[in-house]
Length: 105
Image: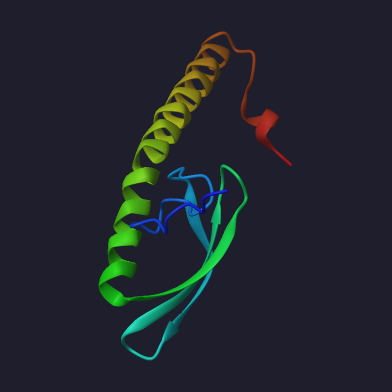
């Protein structure tokens, strides 16, 4: 059985090769490096690494790039939900279905 080569990027899983690795714990080591505990969301493989500041910053940027589409989708969904809520509230107010007393405690 051949062992998979160590990944060249922290976000690549050493076990399955997927790019779903995220840090779940980390600590700075003095001013020049970081200890990180990493877990693959695809297969659950965990590993610990110590990396320099440059590699940690590159990993952080890679995580941000992966999170951006999720944040954009969440914003789009949340905006659509709020728009629907405002439209419903507006119609209810126009039809006198609710008034200020409905919001009293």
